Amino acid sequence: MKTISELQTIASQVRRDIVRQVWLSKSGHPGGSLGCADFLTALYFRQMNHNPRFSMSGKSEDLFFLSNGHISPVFYSVLARSGYFPVDELATFRKLNSRLQGHPATHEHLPGVRVASGSLGQGLSVALGAAYGKKLQKDPGIVYVLTGDGELQEGQIWEAALAAAHHKLDNVIVAVDWNGQQIDGPTNKVMSLGDLPAKWLSFGWDVYNMEGNNMSHVVACLDIVKKAVGNGKPKVILMKTEMGYGVDFMMGSHKWHGVAPNDEQCKIALNQLEETLGDFKI
Image 1 (cartoon, rainbow, N blue to C red):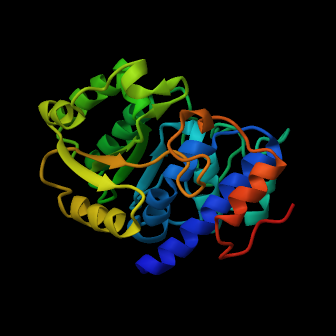
Image 2 (image 1 turned 180 degrees about the vertical axis):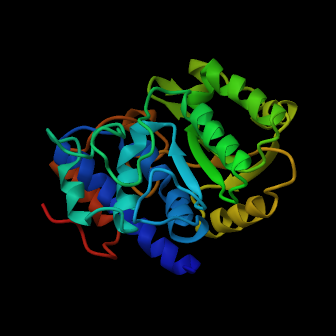
């Protein structure tokens, strides 16, 4: 099991991978990817029971679904670094005929990707189907899903939330990237999310709070939530993060939701992120 220090080391490299992927392709979504690097690192390198020798069935494994598929750079980096495909393939991000499309897709048969995502609002419904399937098969695996906070403006999220509580899907854990930013600006200006803890509680979910850019807290929170699996209620983690975390000129601004850094900006960003595991080759 990875220590906090080891996870922090991996997360630093993951952030470098994110910056370099979007810089190379001159397109992509660095902001949310950087903010979620700690969570996904902890999930894949410590928390989940998963096998890089990928099987779509995921029998007896924990499953992960990325609902906010535009943050694919962090997903691809974590998958590659945990052995699903060669790390150097990250250099093909968003290239023609690459398996690493801007939003995760299944027709390229990229190991680790179970569903095409990026049409916001749909990932939770897919995850609930997988969780229900595991219940029917008496499979002990847990189903994790990551959504964006702006994504909660989609009505399908709340239909799924009702269904999860009704069917007592206590083997599903949702994390909401609660960074307060979306493509058009702060969420409280685009469409206020209101009292999120109260909303999820009223829908019958267990609610947890996480400091998503503090690795110690990420790990501690995930451990606590995992222990509650099987109590009859679905779980949601409201994960406070900062968009662009780790790169000072990107942090906290919706302007870096979907903009690639230029050459100079990339150099500045990489100078702030330690190379710990070796950069992928270009």
